[in-house]
Image (cartoon, rainbow, N blue to C red; front, side):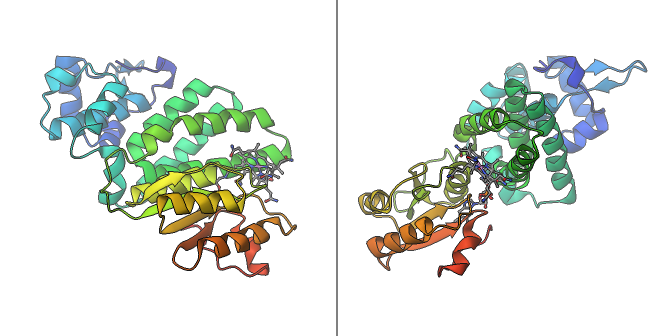
Length: 301
Ligand code: B12
């Protein structure tokens, strides 16, 4: 049941138990009786497991806590397990952040994943990158994944692209894999009909859309009903979106700092069009440029 090749097996059972939350004895029992995971062995005979084994064990643990019988689900693929849990009252990828404090261990885990993901970007291996991301979402939860893995990883990619270590095509490949994760990251539980509505976009000339997309996902995880409009829209169109949805807030993401007046001008127009009853929230790494123009912006939460 290990989906990755055995070269990636690297964790002893003590680490696996700590990271998955499944006691070592139980890991061995699930393995012996149901082949829930099939570790390889070191020359000395110790079992070694992969990140994907850990993600599987974590989901199996959650599913059995929800009442599923291990004998029936032990052979499920990672995707089958995620689908099973999506329909449950408690979905681990969405609740992990709320219930688990952000410990030093989890931050280290995110840092380990950043190294692995960056190596995979360098190797231009989209499939493995996707697999690392999927495992990391299971282990870290969506919010921690976005804040402590994706954001620093993208920052590093931007820096290395600037120094020439990476080419634009490395960034494009990574951005495309990230976009494909949206479905897993989003809060798939139906939100209440009276949840406040929010529009998320970027102004004209701001082509970076990932900051806006991630901000939209974060808002959705916090209970907002979000309509994401994509990037590079004129003020009139964004304001029309606000009007059609009767949104209470408009979130604008800025990733690219320029000296020209386009963004401040667009934001002033937007503010005028949406009026004072709709909150205008501006964030992203380039939002600080607005200070020199006029606008209060919300630093990265
Ligand atoms: C991917 C990328 C691209 C892709 C974007 C693909 C896509 N579909 O989105 C493409 C190829 C289009 C691109 C183009 C360019 N890029 Co670019 N790009 C990046 C990169 C690597 C990641 C950007 C990203 O997605 N960030 C999104 C998130 C992860 O970052 P963030 O903005 O900090 O947002 C986080 C938080 O701030 C927060 N957040 C975001 N929005 C909001 C909103 C609210 C309200 C709140 C509360 C929080 C919040 O949430 C995010 C997650 O936590 C960055 C590197 C970097 N350091 O970010 C360079 C970077 C932004 N790009 C840069 C440059 C120079 C360019 C180009 C000029 C390159 C060129 N010569 O053409 C063009 C400009 C395009 C334009 N006019 O906008 C520079 C910008 C420098 C500057 N002056 O600001 C950077 C910093 C790279 C670098 N180190 O030089 N880029």
